[in-house]
Image 1 (cartoon, rainbow, N blue to C red):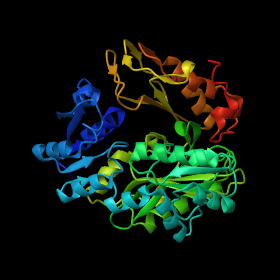
Image 2 (cartoon, rainbow, N blue to C red):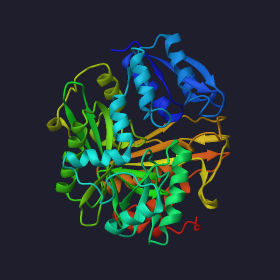
Image 3 (cartoon, rainbow, N blue to C red):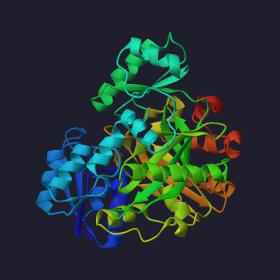
Image 4 (cartoon, one colour):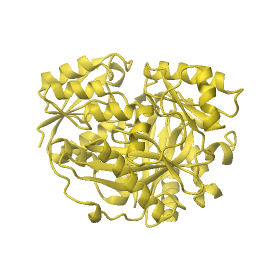
Length: 450
């Protein structure tokens, strides 16, 4: 097992990794930007080093500074968390070249799944269905219009190198296509430094379902069940739950098998998530694979009883998985609400600032992952996520009631948060019945009625 591990990230995921390491007897090294000097992960780690200014490019994306810190402190492993360099194949390659274990998949797997257009072709060869669309990328309007003749409308244009909703545009008609194409290309170039895009048929009111997979370096690959991530705003996930509501067991089982086939097809090792869109008839289609730990991993932990970060570290250390598919037992229902420093009353405007008061919820079935504390200043430089509330119940109704109770207990003073939004969703009759789909927020909620 590792002696010392560097956490190449910030915020709640850095805190999460440090806690897992502490339970495993592994010393930790935190890196931080000048804006994060007082962040909780800095206080919690055994050692902490400033690696640059507030900008992500100068700090958390600065590979030379991170690797210099890793070599200076003599770590034998690096955990990238999610975001920043977590899905950067060059970073994974450099870590491996320095004889340091990367707590994640190989650079080859990251690169293969990072190119969304290439990933589509690869999983098709593995017998996993994909959404009808182009076999590769499209560059000009004429090429896009030609592809649209076979795909049909509405269609969605997606960044080949991206994810998280960036570089994505919907075209309802041929008249919409030129502007949508150029807009997607510009955003993809700005977000990922790669303006390539591809086209898919736009599915009406699908479920966004993802499957957590674990794979060791000894050939074992298994799935840890499914999560529904359909409650989204501008393609950003807001609420996740497991198991997905109102979906047949045979569909969920088939999704699990398909996710395992995807991982096996690319020789995947460590934790990853295979994402699908599922139409109202429960036909499912591969969308992408995230080659890292997910923000919503606690949902799976709640229903399986596993610690996914510890499993990641064990796999990276060369250990075999200690359980098989038949050993897994899924218990109850879990929900996660992402609490962002945003003002839902004013178009989800960012709300950076100092937290002057903070009361975290607790009680049976409630978990809170956060890096915040009273007096902490939320910087404007990074993602607005400040906490995740996870509620577990014996069934979905109990999990919803526990989540609602927890959010009513949750008090944050000094900044605005998305707690009022989540309470609106939890009280919505359609959500209570499990009628969730990717355009739920747009269709079922009046965003100006908080």
